[in-house]
Image 1 (spheres, rainbow, N blue to C red):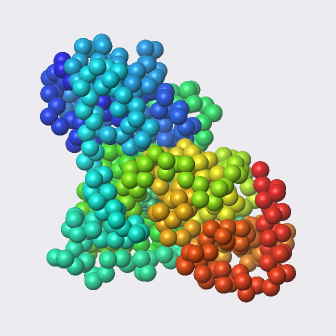
Image 2 (cartoon, rainbow, N blue to C red):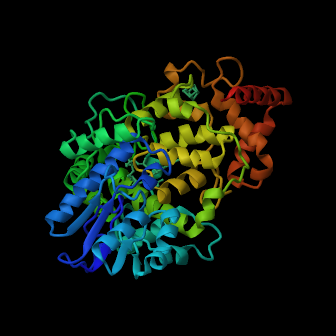
Image 3 (tube, rainbow, N blue to C red):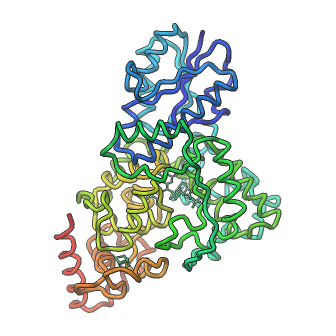
Length: 507
Ligand code: FAD
Ligand code: SF4
């Protein structure tokens, strides 16, 4: 035996670079469920079960392909509890001569790996992660020297590079972006097809029991676990999405409905992020649906933009900004996360619906994350690190490389505009327009002050007034500030008093 190949829980892909040139007879693939990763934040129970089960299935897939796999379960009594400990143990037990791994998705783990060549006294090869379309070097070349890192320009480069939805040098349909045709509210639709769910097999059933036993206090519920945990099942989810949901993806992308948590979203982030699906292949499947006239351009372009645009861009920002990005706190916010983020118990119906769906599914779609839980945290001034940890814990697709820039940059504007051009702050009016949450809420989205006034309204204006010094130069906020300035002083005072009362009671 010669080489140890470490495969992490979100690298479940036979084409992962660490397997390049592997000698199936002599090299050993190490996969390990370790406590340090399972507990560095308190992950949702369904997230833990999804990753452990998908890892166990992938280990079987590798064994069937002829690899020698050493698999450490979370319950193994000699489990060393960390990547470093498990790599050391394997190297010593098997007398291996070198270690190879594909780069991880977090600074924290990369720092740990960088110490290995010294501590193990072995060559350690940390390889680039080819699953992403844009390497760190390419992103840095794109970003360096630019005044602003606008995603739209990055996205156009990615379209040119991949050839997706391109006719020569021109975008198909004559436009790069069809968002103006999207962003509509949605009506409840009892005939909307159902998203695929999978009954737990023996491996998943074992994992569900272990997670309940080892992590009983963690956030979320295990009941109803229906994630795909194999590549084949994840591919079925993709096929179902393309056949039944893609055509309407664009128009309902920003809509929120009380009894329809998934709408026409793809539910593919879990599988793409863990390695069960390839991002480019997913985009090619969507492009094929457009070419075959099974889905319109606004839907397909919008979907592809999320993946080769936003997903790649977020990953680029994460590595480009460095580990200090996690400390960003532009508004100097210090308020702790309110307790209802863990229980879902609040009279504000929009927050209650989204948090309860998160507890149940370890999922919320983009606009729920951005404009409900994210928007509220921004308006009331929660410490962005606490917001970051919450998102990392509660969603089954959350890994720091994608979660952190979405939370710290896009949602909380804690980087002061490094990533986004303006804070995603909105009043109850927006939520009322884009959802059916307000109809059954005890608050009135049209009122700014008074007992039953929607808290988002006073909080929105208070946020703008409170942070005026920091935001005054932002041209995209000129209009809301002009509206605020047009209000008479009495109205302004009443709104700020209403917000202060709410904030004083917020626990
Ligand atoms: P769809 O709506 O069907 O979109 C298709 C695909 O596009 C997704 O599967 C995903 O791969 C990609 N995508 C869409 N938007 C983004 C985005 N902003 N950044 C990166 N990829 C995107 N996404 C994660 O994968 N992990 C996270 O931890 C995560 N945290 C987020 C936190 C906040 C505050 C916000 C605002 C967004 C976050 N996102 C995160 C992005 C987005 O919300 C999820 O990717 C999406 O909701 C996943 O559901 P879906 O697969 O049904 O997506
Ligand atoms: Fe949310 Fe306000 Fe609508 Fe209630 S009225 S659901 S608090 S936006």
